[in-house]
Amino acid sequence: MTGLSQSQASPMQIQPGNAAFNPWTDAALDTIRDVNQALTLYAEMRVVPAHHDAFLAAIDTVSAKLRVLPGFLSLALKQMSGDSTMVKNYPETYKGVLATAYLDGVAAGTQPYFYNLFVRFADGRAARAAGFEALFETHIHPLLHAMAPRGGDGPELLAYRAVLQSVVAGDRHAIYRGAEEIRSFLRRPVELPERETVTVENHVMVPEDKHAAWEPQVAILLQVAQDTFEPQDEPSGVGLPGARDNRYYRKALSTEILRNAHADGGLRAYIMHGVWESVWDHENSHLDPRFLAAAGPVGAAAVVGPVEPFYLTRRLVVAD
Image (tube, rainbow, N blue to C red):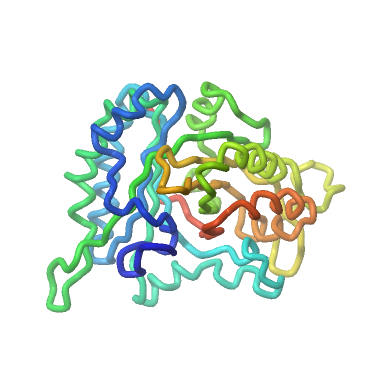
């Protein structure tokens, strides 16, 4: 983590310079209102146990207001559950050792809940017209506080906010590059809470003057994640379930590359977002030589990261 202390930011907040910049304001959204592609209003938040039930209720209230708006696609709230070790190329013996680290931290009372929020809109005008900043400030922001030693609210737990653009996406059927294709993809999310899927979010930053050339390389990596599986002769063409003691894995359920709409100094932040059937499927995919070959050029250009937590979907709301 660069530029933000641990007391200020969640473990996934690797963006160094944007802590004081709120990209959700009307003025900020006005600068991208003519973007004719899907936009995501994105937040990273910490919630203490005393506020947790009220926080989930606030998410439900906001979701109900958003789902009827023109251009709203979906809202997903995801709880950070663990960290990938294979993304860092540790020895295979480390596979999965942090798979439930943040869930265990909450259970032990040593950590708050860590959440990511994805609010998807069809385009810049829909994002601007939704008034999400006001909804967030009214219903969610008041709950983002630590607890004081003698009770009551302590210091504010700062939230990271961003606007993200979907660059390319895929699932087990196809790769999606066009604006309308990606909008259709976002209208049918696969990570329903009852499916108990695992989302991975690989956070990296690349130099601003190189990010346009980098995107085709990361698109190749996305396609590899959608196409490869083990064992390669598995009859269904999907693969077998991964486990701690094997190297099998099933294809990703879906993948998406999201670019921060705003540069951060001389850097540009990205999230490589994937939905898998299990932690083990994802971790074993990182041991596949085909994946490693595609990941080499992508990783070489990242000057911050990779940081790749796991998440569990706690809320998913799609447009009416």
